[in-house]
Image (tube, rainbow, N blue to C red; front, side, top):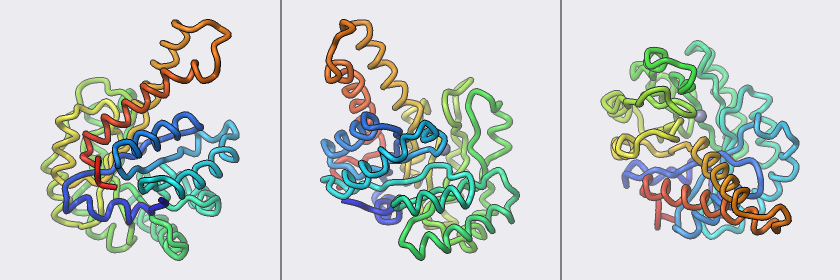
Length: 282
Ligand SMILES: [Zn+2]
């Protein structure tokens, strides 16, 4: 069934679990996420990055996502990840996404509040949930540990941000980064606990891929409600394709070619569901 971000995250804080969210861009990635979630009876968030859709996938993937989400055996939220501006967010809402992120996290606080508030106004009027980001989650391979620290969410800004914007979920920067890391990440769980005390708004951890499980678990127990995964799903696809290429003849059927990648992606999704503790919550 179709669920908004607000609905899908509503129980998470109280029951100390998170809902995993995966970036997909085609039939196979989407199917792997939904089938694994159905198998584990887990709610799930399926996300799309606008830059992944430049190849023209959007016209194919949107009808498929809406149809499958509406008829799925578990709650499925269809979410725009890292919407860069108001126009992009509005476009995805008009396509039928029921949740959007506006990422104005590199802007000064006042601009982030102003832009996010505008999105919340028209999204909420249409029954759509909104995620925003305060502080900034950087890129593991290009930002140094000091850079990542300098972008951390300031707890002192949280109350004003959620009160003035009315967002349904808030991405926080506490030590994760997008993609692989140069060294070992170290999450600032004390900072997260401070933020949790300030707001009841569900909190989101971006850069979930390749972050050690024990630290992710600690963050979820402390109050993270949504865990974003992109890189590790792509890695599972890549490894599965590599295995298929090395094992199969060139004339292998489409089903045979995708069998291994599908299994490896589903396995990864199942692992993340159990890491989040969202199994049997649907
Ligand atoms: Zn992200």
